Image 1: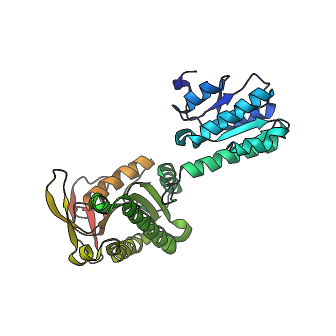
Image 2: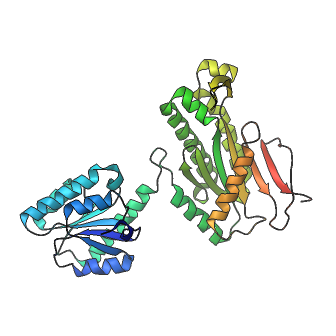
Image 3: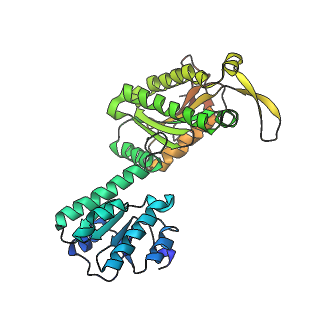
Amino acid sequence: MTDWMVHAQSAIFLTAGQSVPSWLDAWWREAQITPLPIGETNAILAVALRARPRAIVIDGRGDLNWQTASLDVCKRLKRDSYSAIIPIVMLVPTTRFIDAFAAGADEVLRADVAGVEAAARLTAMLRRSDRDTDVHPSTRLPGAREIEAELARRIASGDRFAACYADLDHFKEFNDRYGYHNGDQVIRLLAHILHDVVKGLCGESGFVGHIGGDDFLYTVPIASMARVCDDVIRVFDELIGLQYSEQDQRVGYFFGKDRRGQMHRVPLMTLSVGVVTNQRRHFMRAVEVSELATEMKSYAKTLPGSLWVVDRRREDVPSVSVSPVGEQGHARLGSSGA
């Protein structure tokens, strides 16, 4: 098997030539998964460490030696962090049912299992896998794929919404001074602030995702935009100083080196939020929202202090003007004459 054969909708199938259960064939077709048979245990390890299939199916039926080898493959796949996140299902004789779970299999099925039950359990296995891999490990917030799905859902609904891209300012310098452990604490603090404010004010109509690092994206109904963003900024500014030493907190800065090795004053962290809405724009794809939100976030980072900026431009008006920062701590990028 060559690596190019393995793709996101394929399943590596380790088999010694046993007959394939009819329910497994039916499930592959229903889930639109292409099985890629492999007959050697070492080959499956080599492929799994270079590619990322949708799942791995190990047929552990057969003689005693094959059963033992199959269990060993499962253990070895789950020991490596790269291949461990690939969901593994094992087909086993009744006597090996407990052994397969002990080896790390995510799902274990006997060959005589009812087809309806097998399909339901395999589908649930993939759903659990998607949920686990789409969640950021440090914040437990949805990751990039769920963020894209949320934006697509908002666009499809036709409801007015605001997509808000939040990013920390001077986080790298803080990380360099205080270490990655304290940096991770700041990331979790921001995640808690965003989650508590968005869910507290919007409930199920609000969404918070973690893009990665110190980048987050949250969506709220447009009617809640101003209150949510104001509260996020206010709570962040109240709490962020507590992450610094008493001396740094008292003077409001510390001395750090820039990329050229020159010493300069580094202010306490602030939060920049770039906001886009579909109030004056018609979005067709999630990527359009994310690109514009990134642009607005970058603009927000050029302004001092913690603030949020919202895009007020119209699609049919190319010229823009920037109004002053308002009393609520935000700026608006708006079309001229609007």
